[in-house]
Image 1 (cartoon, rainbow, N blue to C red):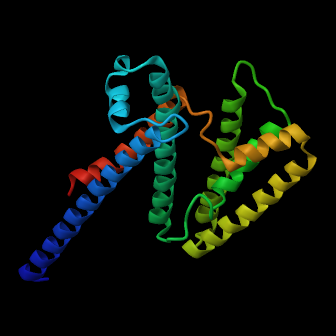
Image 2 (image 1 turned 180 degrees about the vertical axis):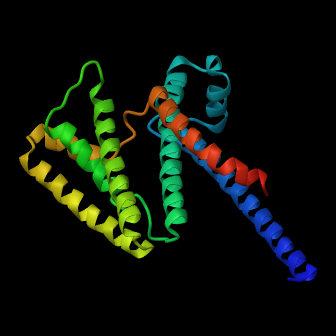
Image 3 (image 1 turned 90 degrees about the vertical axis):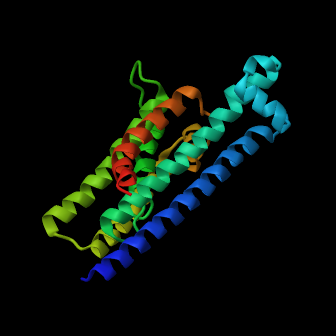
Length: 234
């Protein structure tokens, strides 16, 4: 490869990185504006000036406005941001590892396995003192999702399966865990079924600064070690 070719490749790479940086900056601004709009719009609508004052100096607004912004809307908006980022990161990592755009937590069975784990805790009425029920349900979902990952990893190690085979096995896991969830729904009581459906649909109504801190911490611990070296290498 000649020096001219190396120079051309380097320039093309630098141009692509600058374009990606601009796109990320624009998306970051759009995300920030979306969070502010989400905090301003609702039954109690706030003007941009009032909202910014409530965020920057909560003592400068009335107690009701400060409560709505800081205890309800900001946790909801930031939780939605972190959840979306975590799902996007999970999909990006799976697509990178398997080199397949079809790979995601949904097509590989992780989401269905998590739903099955949650259904076990909800329908069977598991309680472990002094662990809150919501943490127990989340823990069961995590364990079953990890089991799904372990099964796929075992397939790769023992059978040297190709990417396509892994994807197909992931789809098989999806249907298997969905069938188990349907079985749990069939035997569930009315209250347990309602809680299970509510959990599987997802909601931000339980978002708080505590749960937001846990999710943001886990997201940061996973994100920064993976991507900061690459960003510095640009």
